[in-house]
Length: 297
Length: 274
Image (cartoon, rainbow over all chains, first blue to last red; front, side, top):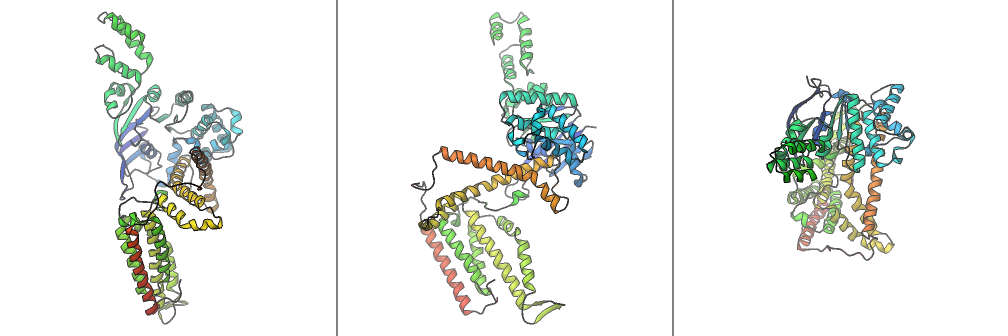
């Protein structure tokens, strides 16, 4: 049995009004425990709507979400319990900070879970460590922090609930390249230590391909593809057809393959590309000039 | 949900009502409201109700939206109507202890219900068919004479424009913050009054913070485009009365005249104005 199972999930906004719009259309897929899944798609492709159905923030108009094989809407009054198990970090989460101190803000979730104060303290410390918040920041007002620190404090607020599934909606939006790298590394490390399931929504294939095991590609509310990173990128041209960018390095490899070089196209990191090209150089059939050109690149 | 609020909603269109000058629409709306209140018998109220209905029909906005605006106040309408039902004078048609229903009570109840609904609908026509910018533009021009008394008409109008402009933005923001806090286990639906009030803090604090942030950003953006208030400011689009406006004015005057005549020559159904 899968940890999370989506069965013919659909959601329509504004049913029976002039603004009726189907945001998610008949999506079915299984998510196993411990997987790191990247979700990618255009603005308006239904990513955000889809993930909000996974922790019961919105109720699907059709279909079911099964958590451990049970419909999360089985007992609508118990939906909060689902939200504690499926943690959700929204876009620009720093705008949800409200408490007097960072510590209290991170403790908001665990407090709502009804944990005792010792446990809450431990959770707050753990969450702060995972997000690399310095201990002295915990006593400060969240509004005194820098942008990146605020973002991490807000993420800590969700991590502190220790969810089995953590969903992050574009956690790196608006951060500088360095902040983005740091945050992604932290999320990857968190996933590795905790061994829980992480869903990461992003615009950037480059970001996702670095840390995800599998990718879900959404297009106009439909599940376009759901597969391992390797398999998704080997279909690079299809992905480009729906207007998404595959990593530059994969594009280069596809280009090389097109011009007759025998390279694999399911390459998504520079290291892999180097290996592929080195293999090519050893191959005697390749003209020397072409090999030289690749060496320079 | 929050998104269902129709307040200040504008539906672009090309109907006769849409094309009227906002000043004319505001003036006529004021008179419509006055005459809806001035109507003292069913005939004159009937004329006003028919006029409101006619305006709705030519406004070209989906009737659903008008139903929505009534839905929001239906409770108030029913409550006032029920209250008035028991306050009639004359022979009781039905009695239970101190509660009695009379013919005049029924009349007043229906009268008041029709009056409130007509009032809401005609106001809805204005907001549905006039863009917020046009609306404040019209208000600014109409209030201009007040600047003689050193009232900053332009500033007031600008504040209204900004306030109207940010209603949907802030609603959306509230929705987002609510979802984010719900995801952290916030519970807005259970507990007594005090607990529910306390549960709002995690929403209100971020909402205020973001409102101030937006205000500062907007002020900066306006200043960087050299905004310095109303003095010497010219308009890209100057409001002008057209034939349509005079037509609307004429038609409305006829209706108002009808109401006045009916109110004078026919007996009043309702004792008081309200």
